[in-house]
Length: 223
Image (cartoon, rainbow, N blue to C red):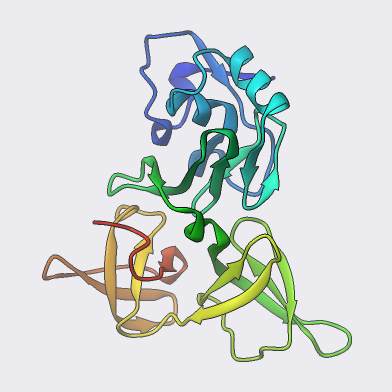
C-alpha cells in the first residue's frame, strides 16, 4: 500500500489527525518508519508543497539532496541526522528529534551539510583484515581503524563517505537518547556498565540502555 491511514501514522510526524484520511507511506529504507518520514511529507511541512502531486513534481524537476545525493522518490524515508538540501531554494536542514521524540528539522548552513554523525551499531573483521562497520542510517563501511568500538559515533564527510572524527562513548560524552522513555533527551554520560548507561540531565541522574545512546558533536542540537 502506498498510503497510511492518518491515525496510524507515527506520532513523531506531528500530523493533524482529522485533516485528511490518508498520508503517504515511506518506502522501505535505512530508517524505521517510527523514526523517519517520507521526503515528500517533509517538503509539505516546510511549505514548499501543499499536495503530494506538487511534492513529486518538485523532486522530479529540481535538485532535492539527501546526504549529498539527489533523490527523486517522494516516499524516500529521511531520519535522524540525515541532511536534506533544497538547492533551488538554497535551504539546508538536518533531521533531528526533540525532547518528545518528535521529528524536527534544524536549518543549517552549507558547511554543516558536509558532515554526518553515524552511530556504530556493530563491527566485524572481514577477509584481508579490514574492519567492517555497520552504521546507523544503513551504511556499511570498511576501515583500517581498529580502535572504533560499537556505540561510538563516527563523523562522515559527505558525499565522499570518508571517516572523519570519532566520538567515543565514554564518561563525559554528550549523548542523544534515541529510544525508550528518555527518547529525545540530551544528557552527559556518567557511567557505562555493559548494557546500561547512567547519564545526567538537568542536574538529575537517569539510566537507560546503552544501545539508545547516540554520541553527538557539540552544537548539533540546541537544547
